[in-house]
Length: 353
Image (cartoon, rainbow, N blue to C red):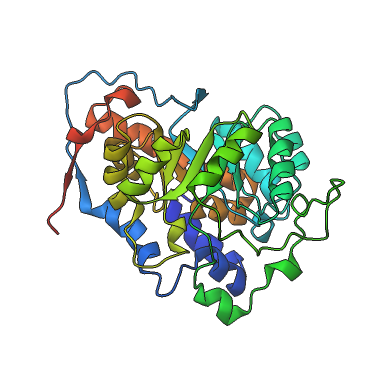
């Protein structure tokens, strides 16, 4: 049977992957309350369609950080794509280029950055960084991704320590021993170590350190993992270029708000001064529309990309992206939006259920 929605891919991927790999991809922190809330919170929002609007032409294109993409649906940073498909991130990069959207490549990619860039030249890529205690390693990696043509630096801020991921503990997952991370353990001479230690991630990183990162690169800096107005205001104060409202897919601190529930607070705090994006819980085109109506410029999709990859490799990722893009086009058409600019808060109401 054809796979016609993202949950079809989820079911099929579960059958194809080992239990430990599935648990690693799907797992959240502690009781997984936030992971599940990310999806459920969207279903508490209802749409208010407008009709007789001449929707014979509907344009889903937008720009993010000055670059045009075909729709406000991009790929969130996730590591270890080789767990889902042998070609890993190379397949993901090719699918993103074919879809005309942005792919945020994880620092924990299981393919080399050169291979990812080389397999999909011309694709729009951002790079996601976990800050390492060794400043020289951070500097070398940032300079490398800028030279390779990545267009933005996404600094993940919500991992001063890895969250309590019970499934990984139960399965005794040790990615350091099982995966070869080719780009990350750079020595002073630029040589790769056999693998990059997943820890330590620098727990001392603070707001004042952002100026050092800004001194290293001309790339726009995006902070991923902001959930409060206080941190959103500090992000604006420290001259970053964007925020990804995110709770790390519910994998870090459990019992925090769903991303969509935190979005309005962050959007109000930045007052249009920087672009705000969202990840967490996107499963349908309606979800995309709701996020944009609440002020997100663009959404980033995580686990469904790995579901597509596990099912059909590059073509599976393309199918997942095309399903979302087509559903979003339908959502726009049926709510009377001819362009993304016409999507606004008047399109939604919150359910009393």
